[in-house]
Image (cartoon, rainbow, N blue to C red; front, top):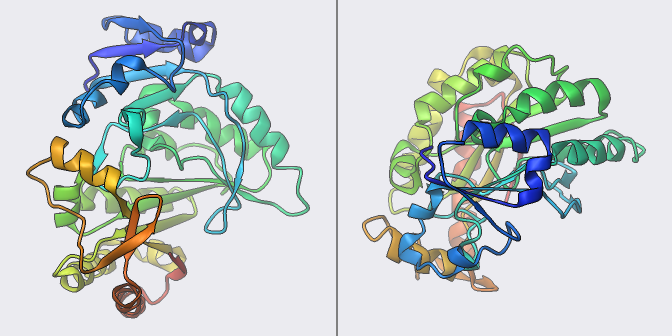
Length: 331
């Protein structure tokens, strides 16, 4: 991550993390802003500048703390310590108008967010799982903030239920010795290597992701993988079978015995396509007119017949190559 400019809300410097970041990035120009949500200079930039804007770091406080019910691996999606990312996955669901999700935003009021999380974890009759990484990649963020070294043992000691986050990065070494008490569920997103190379720009390789999965499992974390998003390229059956063979051959026996799997098919949008055509003109076009249909709000998903064929294929080959794994859902 090679940042060249920091945009910051002035009151963020009243927090300990804000002061730390100010010291860590003191060599960069700091530009005050009224709100991390509306940076006028960014809104005026063209789609062609999308990737360049990932060299900007945005620092502020999170004002929205509304939890959203979820029916997948977690019970609730939790707005947490960051939003956006420095990678550039061409399908990223965080991409939106006005370029406000092209860059990494760090929120320094982590104590406030953790206090609500701990209190909420005791409000229900049963232990819940809270997704804290739906708006960013916390493994990536952690290299700047070290937030996970604080969050994981804190929740283990004081919280009820579980926290979880997905990642496409592999800098997990600081997490391995933490006292997590099995309350942090680690999930790694995987895809065929050719898709990672061409479409998940700036993320870790498949081999390094698998190493991280094995390391986190060995450290006692409940561990799963997301085969996500499944992209129906012309040769997708060959690619995803090769992926599952690689997982079968390189995941440890311990990992395979406790592994759970989530499968998510790609959705796309006209906003993605407009940005990608200008910012990444030499990358594959993910829109496929014959295979896709409208889903509302300018989004596209795979047509039911193509999707059904893909689901059957993925299910059958997970059962073939990873028979001990628990397939949680396909969406």
